[in-house]
Length: 139
Image 1 (cartoon, one colour):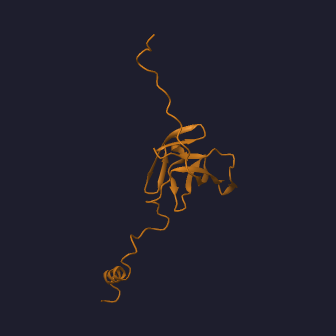
Image 2 (image 1 turned 90 degrees about the vertical axis):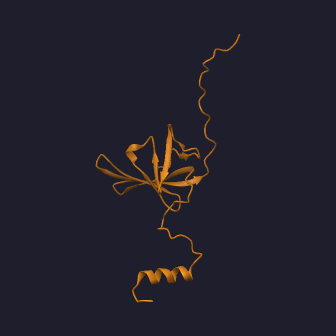
Image 3 (image 1 turned 135 degrees about the vertical axis):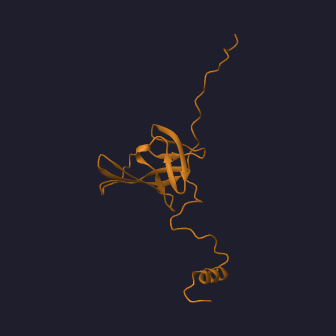
């Protein structure tokens, strides 16, 4: 083995720790499910702020739908980045290993940082609205 050879170090590491599993960056969320009910942990504007305790909860349903107060839409998660269809101005939310969602965005030249924490499981999704039947009812 040559000193300073990265291949030798990698081989030695694989021999010593064969059951360690894949190496992941700290905070990576590939295997974390984000469905659930989220509440506001902090709401900062230009570094000042606190929590918005009266903020409606964000609910991420397993079928990729979400509700946030009166807002409804679809959510997607890709490589630890959460996108809400009804909040394009907030951009992507970063999901950390503790399942907190951090939104960072600029609006009116002010820096916003909003952190949501997972408070529990998502309740049952609301029923789909009924569509009127194309066939008139029989008398």
